[in-house]
Image (tube, rainbow over all chains, first blue to last red; front, side, top):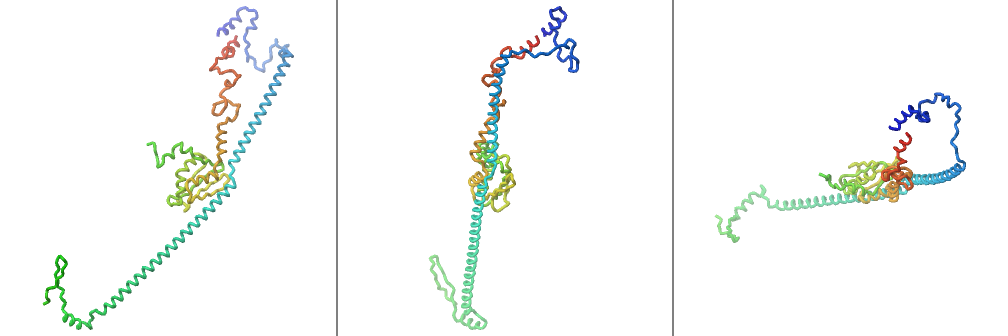
Length: 199
Length: 170
């Protein structure tokens, strides 16, 4: 702030080069404004250069740039190699091996055969069970028939002693002639006594 | 309550990270057909219950779909990126056998996995600056021979911005 203030007063105070102390107002003139009359004969000269220093500096820069260029190319090659490797790896791991697919098909085939065998075994088992069931059923029927036959024969034998209207009188005579005494007594020692006389 | 479900260990990060199978990028969809009952589907049921969460965790980009009681025998079907379909019969196989099978068929090899892990840790470009996770260096002040960090060692007065501004104005 203070230097700025000092500058303001410098224009008023008589100084050795007042114009030189004036702050150049950059941007006061646009590019379309003509240059000042005082600058009409101005010839722009490049800044002075010491040739020896220039040579030395140029030589140094030349060496520096060549080294940097070499390094850059080495790094570029390295980076490209890494990128190519990464791409290759990505391609490798994304590919599905045909050999493995064939192996998978073989495994599926094996499973299929196992399954078919199992199903066949189960069917045979079922058939056997059905057959066994039929045999059992037939045996049961046979036994039943035999039982029934036996009963029928027994009944036929017993039928000979049945009382029919034809031999009714005969049987009544028989019963009257042979009275049966069904009376008996039993004690706690299971002794049976038949003393009651039939009257 | 913190625990949910029958085997809450399946929900832990440690369990999920222990999944071994990482599919190749060609695999897009995996379909599992299995049955709720029956001794032949037992392995498939165990696979769905214990291994599928690990698979999905390791392969978030793969769609895994389950179909229950659709077919008499259990199987897996993989749909690849080029439209191919691969069938894997898993009837009468145990959980472990199924996992080994699909690992051999579609899993990335251990070398590939290690290489990918290493590449993830590798810095992509050695010349860039930024967070240590993605770059070698945070700032140029870390390099020997460069101007040290002004936060640690104050810059000489002549190099500070405010000195330069004052001298320019004078």
